[in-house]
Amino acid sequence: MKTLFTIGYEGASLTDFISTLKRAGVQHVLDIRDVPQSRRPGFSKSALGAALGDNGISYSHVKALGDPKEGREAARRGDYERFRAIFERHLSTAEAQQGLVEAAKSVAHSPTVVLCYERDPKHCHRTIVAERLKGVCSLNVQHLGVVHNAGRQREYLSRAA
Image 1 (cartoon, rainbow, N blue to C red):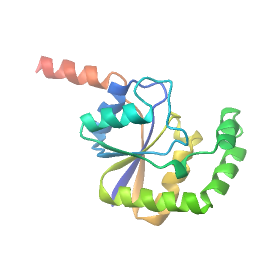
Image 2 (cartoon, rainbow, N blue to C red; image 1 turned 180 degrees about the vertical axis):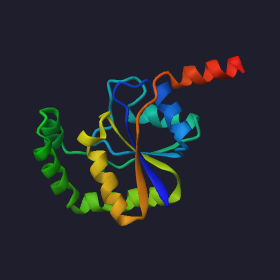
Image 3 (tube, one colour; image 1 turned 120 degrees about the horizontal axis):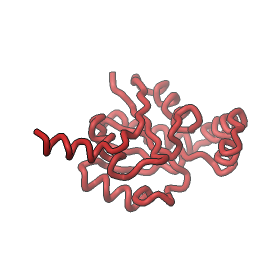
């Protein structure tokens, strides 16, 4: 059975983020942010895609699976019930349904991680997307946490060996 990974980059450096993906064996990042821009260096769409490509990891953005602004605002306020209702309504649209089909193809093709910002998967729409994908294809879902200083630890271990 295939594994679909999910990850949030909140508080992470790009180096640690990529190291975490490599350690998990991820070959494709499926970005499901509605707006793939970030104040965090390296995590905006173009820069992230280039950095991942330099590390042998492919990248795609599926805007249709992004959380609408109203849902993001509800989540920021801690109104998770409203957030879920808004996102579930969004997932019923034809555009989001097509996005799920696109995502399922990606998952079937290579080890994939679903990316969004929030560190805690309980409060992120990527968990809802992962559960929907689990219903479409037979897979396990594993939430990854970015291992901080992963790149530096690996570098230190290789020098010590």
